[in-house]
Length: 366
Ligand code: GTP
Ligand code: MG
Image 1 (cartoon, rainbow, N blue to C red):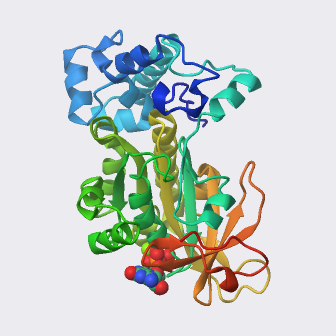
Image 2: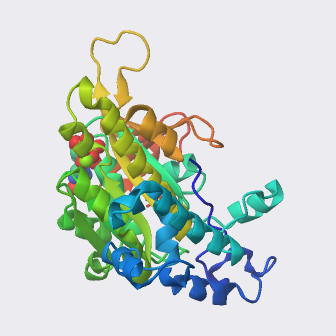
């Protein structure tokens, strides 16, 4: 299922590079405010009882409803799927009517114009940013997968810091939600990275909301309720480290594979819709399955299999190479498939010193 595309960017005019040449229509900022405050009972057919049920599960605005899949809504309010689908369609139709969402048919020129307004966040490494054509994109899910110790969690920690820096420094001046499923979030490491980058550690720590997910259902609940955090805290990046660990631990054996894939599929689609609807970047990590008996092809396969692979917008495979780390862009719709080297140090993710990097890769930024 294709998620709806957010047509209005969260950026204000002053923040937009494009603002000089392509000014927003005069009503754009008003529209943003209108949509942010458009509550579910503004939709025809939603009375006080349904409103209360939706509110109780964190669905307050029409935008919150548009992010959900019909099955999420059916579960949340205890209705059948037909009624839930009707509610989701109404939310979407309302946002199309207000010109906040794209119409179903849209010209390629218009998509191209809108894609130019996608924002990017530096990973902390110039070479990794290069691989990503400038950094982690908003309105997309970027997946980092690789073996243990390959740097997935370190990338997530560094992003918690870089996202909060100004646009000139490669950030978006926004805060971060960190969904921690493996209990590996370390504020001390955040403080170290912030200090090494010359930032105020207290301010950086204040800009991160951590949600510990105890199992897959809890993880789904947290991600389903992101709307209010995003609205009230100016969140620009949501990290899910790791997206698949709980599913992997809870659904063992072949008999449970189909349910696992269904749940994971639903979860990943919620992430995609959240990224697009709220114009934020979502970063998810994924482990690799080691298959030492595999002699042909890649012995390491991402755990989520096709589900995560097909849902993520961008996928980056990480591996260790001595003290360095190697990142490879995999299956991107428009990035070249190539590899870059980065390192892990007190700044989190960093570029290797020039002499240590091979084949003319970028030199260190510091
Ligand atoms: P799993 O979650 O186990 O699958 O691995 P991961 O890919 O998330 O690995 P992670 O990002 O936690 O990377 C761990 C590696 O980062 C360690 O082997 C260390 O080399 C490095 N590392 C972790 N903390 C620090 C630190 O404070 N300083 C430096 N220089 N390196 C660190
Ligand atoms: Mg990790």
